[in-house]
Length: 311
Ligand code: FAQ
Image (cartoon, rainbow, N blue to C red; front, top):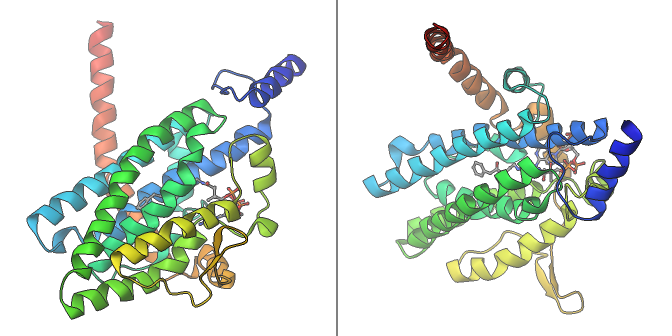
């Protein structure tokens, strides 16, 4: 019954064990997991677009092959995450529908445009870097299928981050104009990457409960700080400047202080007013509708196989 189920659920959470799909769980726990996991899945799927935009224009065959592999990894991440969300009883068609009608959220970062090749470097270094910071703790999330999906995703994200760093490093070792291109791109991506961690703790309605349930292990601001601390020495190695005049080592705190972010921009992007919200959704919708015949063919094939097996 529910009382016994709840007791066992709390015991699993307190003892840092995993909650599995067949375990009793509070409806609100299920709901917040579906919310977070589906948003995460949508981010991976929409996140293919800003880089997909550069596949045909990558500056060498090797760069093209690497970029294609990375974008394919993102499709894979989306699929593991949809599978994890499905174990909570929400089917994939419902989630797709929520995405293409604009009802679902996905990460703010993918509503920014990628006008230069250096943006492939910045996405890998900053966006995948932020993703790793946020996602490594999720490997210990209390919900088993989500945590296990994150383990593999994080391994691939580490490779993605290195390839982005390496793109920027090649540019920084190049000509004057290549260095300028890298710096200009970092200038555009830095603040939006810091916003990926979500609003400041004081304005984060879901954090407290998600941390009590051990879905989130650290708060948005804690992870943002960890990310900034990680970036500074990497920026020095690259020779790029992080665009924040207030960025400064704080001996007392043992962390870098950094400037206030423009949260009005973040909320504006969430409302649909970012550079690329409309493009992203239209492209996704067209891909989904254009792929309808593949789903129909797969269904017809599966029916035929099932009929043959029944004979
Ligand atoms: N964008 O109360 P909180 C990737 C929403 S990495 C849009 O703090 P929570 C890899 C939030 O959903 C990107 N919305 O929420 C890649 C909530 O709205 P709701 C994906 C945001 O859940 C790299 C409201 O604001 N990663 O894809 C954002 O406790 C390169 C209040 O916020 C993940 O999804 C945002 N940045 O904490 C792929 C990681 N931030 O739902 C391709 C898993 C907040 O109440 C290329 N997710 N919101 O309507 C998480 O860790 C959490 O969900 C947070 C937000 C930390 C994102």
